[in-house]
Length: 429
Image (tube, rainbow, N blue to C red; front, side, top):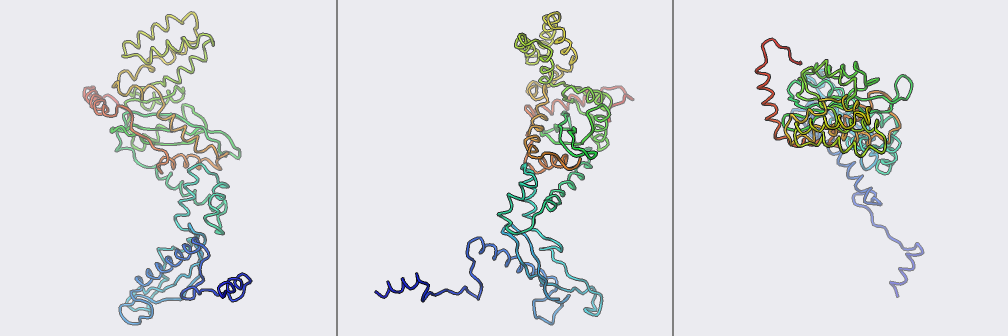
């Protein structure tokens, strides 16, 4: 009976009792608040220990080899994964000479929570990760709001955080390429919408992916240009040469006239492989619809032949068959010429990789998928910096080429060939 009465009293708000939080602290109402309080306390303890080590003496100790003294506290707000933390940060004064406080002094600066730091590194990393995942500024703010609670995260703050990518991008574009052995070089461009000359327009970003001697692929350079002209591509190749890149054995390209001309001027001794897929598209564009399947089958007999000799036979047969029926188709094939068959001179295990620009096309597809949420980039450097960061961060990975174990033989043959060259013959830089 007594138990029932107490239960009714509690329901009416009478005779209720509360359990005080230990040490006079307010008990957090949720696990999240408990974690947040522990994070705040851990930061304050870490900074206190950091100051104690800098001063050479614990709090209230007057003797010993003290290297400074405490100077009160200041309030700081630091945004972290659990929300904004109101911190009580100790201040200190450091002695700069053996004269102690009578000599010159300086204010102690924490390395755990640097001056002017408003966000923990994890917050900045989360912003950059969301940006690289394809989120725009508005989406980033919305995605992180539940995590950061009332912590400020304005559009300008997000832009400044993302801007740190540009610093890494600028340093990467200056890195030396002299130590790299690049037998194969893939070249292509991707169009991005960005603001340039006070107008949003679509501009090409020239890209170069090199295959190293161990078969791994590496993004070597990115550069936004006004067009894919000969001068644009020539300047792009020359800046890599200036960074130490040696002429590759083979350049794999899509057939852009400006690019082909630039390779001839900058890397005159490099072989060129025209993309078989791009050439087929151009050929079918010239073919009547009812003949396209037959033309495609005849073209595949060329590029999927079992040897270079068989490929040449199929090439001649294609010309003979279609010269009068579809002269435009044959003219398009002849435009590619021998550069469509260059890959046959390399190891058979690498033919699939070398006969198309799929290596760099797949990279461009990943680029497009990640930037499709960006209506346009605010300036010319932000777009190229984002593409670089996607690869540098590992979000886009480049695997080894097929048949990479045969690369050592390819490089060895090339070196022996160069060793037989006549003295005084000029080679590509």
